[in-house]
Amino acid sequence: MPGRLEGKVAIVTGAGRGIGRAEALLLAKEGCRVVVNDPGVTVAGEGRDTSPAEEVVAEIKKMGGDAVPNFDSVTEMATGEKLVKLALDTWGRLDILINNAGILRDRMIFNMTEEEWDAVIAVHLKGHFTVTKYASQVFRQQRSGRIVNTSSESGLGNMGQANYSAAKEGIVGLTRTLALDLGRYGVTVNAIRPRAGTRMTLSPELRAAMERARQAREAGQQVDTQTESVIAQIEALKPEMVAPLVVYLCTDAAANVNGRDFLVGGNEISLMSIPHREKTIYREGGWDLDSLERVFPSTLGAGLRNPAPPQPPAQPS
Figure 1: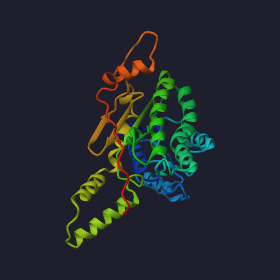
Figure 2 (figure 1 turned 60 degrees about the horizontal axis):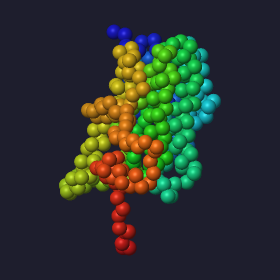
Figure 3 (figure 1 turned 90 degrees about the vertical axis):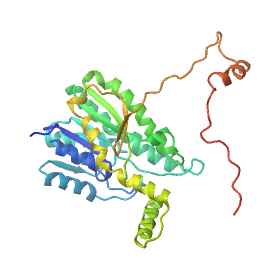
């Protein structure tokens, strides 16, 4: 039985490991030919290694599919053009783009360097633009195409990830605008906020805690139940459980799904709401400070809660 994407061609960025790898493999299983992009960098975006992309290509070919590797960084405009050209030169077409590449440089905002900010924005946010620009030119001309972008729940706010959060929520805004720009040409653009146990989520600290818990269990010692719970939850969130929604959004069955973002992971898929005005106040002639002090607390400010209220200074140890 032919796959749902038989004869289609896809580009998947960051496809050497984790979620990108799972996406590339499932696309191939459904008959898609895949450009596997991954420079093989560390979680922090350092170093180079061609083996992750090469291994995914080998897996796809072993299952009877077709794929080619690419090892360039999506931070460069030339890479976007090169990836699209690679797909067209190899198979004569392009139908799908999965923007997935990403890195982490977590740090509290008061300690974050300019380089840490720029590096994360470049890979995540600019990296979505560099490939989408050239893919959209093909999609517009052929009046068809599917784009799936990768955002994150961290875009809703996550301590110590100002750069990552800004990039990921920027991707949602980009997705909604791309959907408007390209929808008239038969192109859909959606985003996911994945939950999965990958290099990006399994921090060195958490990996160390997992190893300590494993050793304690083997030694017959009691393990902290909270640690065990966190470990169990993360271990259950396999990258392969994210890929089906991504591939579904690339099929004809999802032709009317455009400009939306989804939380996906484990057993859950949720459609995220589009922000709207919760409350509005109106005053003829506009607002002044006296009026706002009088009206705001009982209207717009009613029920608002500070998610991070002030804390007393830490006592020296």
